[in-house]
Amino acid sequence: MRFAPNTPLLWLTALAVIPATTALVFFQEGPGMWIGLMVLVGVLAASAIDLARSQGRLDRLDLEAPDLLRATRGREWSIPLKFSNLGDSDLPWLRFGLPILPEFRVVGEVVARLPEIPAEKARRATFDLLPLRRGQFFLDACHVETASRWGLWLVRRRFPLALEVRVYPDLSVERRRLSGIFLHRGNEGGHAVRQVGKGREFEQLREYQHGDDYIDIDWKATARRGQPVTRTYQIERTQEVYVIVDHSRLSAREIRTPVEAMDESLAAFSEYAEGGEFAVTTQLERFLHCSLILASVAQRQGDLFGFISFADQVDRFIRSRSGANHYNIVRDALYTLEPKMVAPDFEQLMVTLRQRLTRRALLVMLVDLSDPLTAEQFYESIPLVSRQHLVLVNMVRPEKAHPLFSPRREPGTMEEIYENLGGHFQWSDLGEIGKKLSHLGVDLGLPEHEELCAETVTQYLNVKKRQLI
Image (tube, rainbow, N blue to C red; front, top):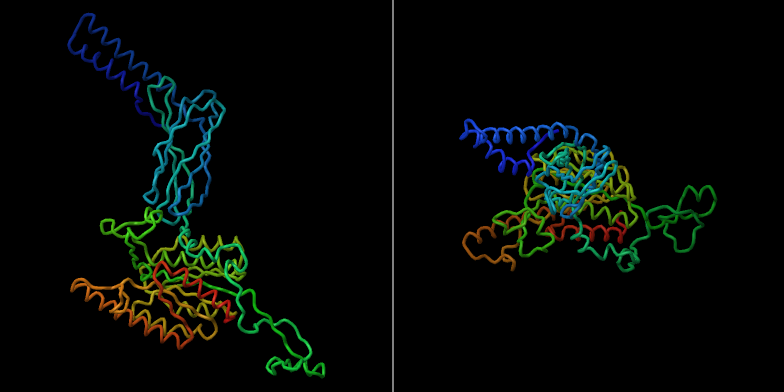
């Protein structure tokens, strides 16, 4: 319990204590000295008595707060609080506030105020915040104050909290761009398409019919029955999809977007650089958004979805499953991922995938291959899994990686000419990497950062349509 002078005590000091002290200095004897002494003693006695009577003013106040709250980056949310006055005297008013981390912004008043709380009554309140970053955060205290019994002091108390706040990425922009996929009509908003192929999943045995392929004849069953028997297959409805996210040093590459080209609702919650001209995010943020979007789409398509993250080692491995609970598990596994300043170990990743994934699956790898040495290591390691699984690789196209004579990159100065030339070489190197990977059956995508989710989802739906896994 702590105490601080309240406004009435400050006014009393200014209007009574200071004149009384002045009287004691100028009047060494006589009525003036006695009057000043009486006023000074009276004020000191009243403040001391009020302080003594208010020692346990907030001892009977109880605070209830949740242990876990979930929020979305860039969206306002409230912390529900319940203050219960368990004592036998009323509290005239109550003010409270929370120590706010730099990753949050207070919406409204920093210190909130509640009206009178009668004895043995409770009041509910909310503290509104705006999360500015994703991640896991902890709020450990709530500070409360009220007036003393005579109102001369402010009685303050610190309530310890154990509130965990999980801030998830905001997927609203990506969902709007993929609105057709999330419409609840027909085939997720798409058109009916002819399934290519006859399927790979065994359905039943039946007698041989004219026109059946000899490859489909089950020779063991034919020998047992003494007549030709054919295997029939059906289109697979449930497939395994894994998103593999690289959060090594290259995932921290900045992605800049001009503020004037952004949607206002999105730009308001971005981190700014270069005098506010650009909104800055990282490649890893785009990878995580893409992972959650693809998880949602796979769930709607009836597939099993898994998540793997790695840097210098595999640190998160979530076996593919389906359902809303599994989506929440994946979301809780990736929302705390941060770039790790180490080189990626592709060989260990491929060995882990080879050992733990025995069934053929679609592997969507979100990695950065803009560094030639990293790309070479990836190319040497990928054959360990590309023979068994279908692999799609996507990365955000580097800002300067465009053809030299691209219309979007018109140089205006000599410096920009050399920048475009360097970007052309980088674009050419990435094209060579894509050609080398294509010989191994691996597709490399280089979409712009705002098109990463749409491109990845389109690739996945094409794989489903063509029955490639």
